[in-house]
Image 1 (cartoon, rainbow, N blue to C red):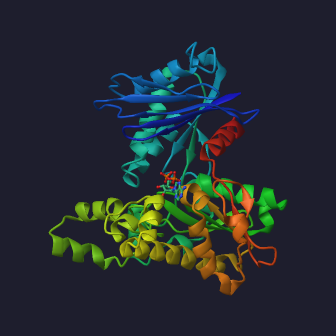
Image 2 (image 1 turned 90 degrees about the vertical axis):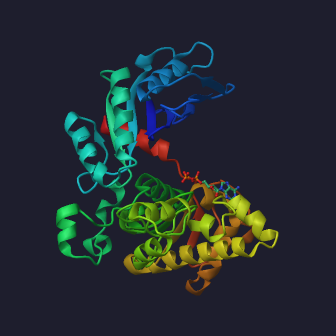
Image 3 (image 1 turned 180 degrees about the vertical axis):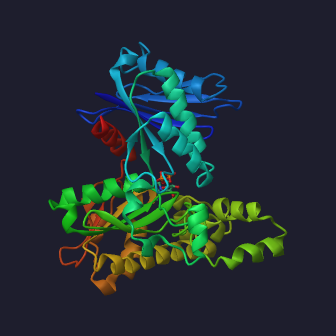
Length: 397
Ligand code: ADP
């Protein structure tokens, strides 16, 4: 069966068409600037040249229709008819406490996703728009929702509660949820598979280090803690997000800079992280590494602070895990930046973590990178959220 995987944002839509038997990606692409001037669809069919389609796209409905047209086009298409698409899997960011696993979409599920928009105002409404657009264009094709938060629903209350008045949890469901769950699930499962062991027998720390970054502690196959919280702002220092900070900073900066709460929130999400800390050099680690190599002190400080925060989280997760068997690095930075892995592991030498420098010297490959005498197995496991979504969609059918 062929599964269409959709990741819908407010003005963008990413897609992959995956053959569930071979797990091959038949085509993938990205629609940008939906509803704004300059709409563009970039379609990449496997084994053929990429095509760019520039045409006005008033809304997501039109965008989905153009994606389908591209998939069945006689020149750059990869299927001959829409009926070949057996199911659609949607990435949905917030599933709250309601969803601890993927579900087939029903009118009731859509209502729940809408209600959960209060917790993810930037993401859930956009995800819902994508679902509606696919339903309209592919009537009768089963659609599934795969939630970023679901994998973390096994966390115990002591991991997910904040030290706040309990009534806020009751009234507003303020608690830690965690994100990137599909990736943490996929990477921890794959790490166990590569080692030829059962995930149920392992204590794994997954470091998903992309533009957004989070760490999770996976004990015997279940998430017991993760670094993101109510929103994807908590935890690690990220590309442009601050991660953990003293909450009193919010009102202090607001007062000093004359900013509203929403404006401070914007600074914490978009102008902070390694970007802010480096004095605006970049949120991209390739640029930061180059600037640091050129002697830029702020870029060096941003990188050192980033490494330290990651290492501190990994070590902290030895508590819920009661030890660590495996550390797995994934996502843009984790897969492609050997220096991040080396610097983080250097700080964990006290617990017997030891890298093999030659094995670590690579990008984007699935590989064990620890030395033979390391007490903890360190690995790079490229994440594949789309494949995980396709697999979960198929499992639901
Ligand atoms: P997201 O999905 O959160 O947008 P990704 O997981 O795609 O992010 O990660 C993107 C980031 O990966 C880039 O911003 C960059 O910092 C980092 N990255 C990509 N390639 C490299 C590389 N060769 N070396 C170092 N960092 C890289």
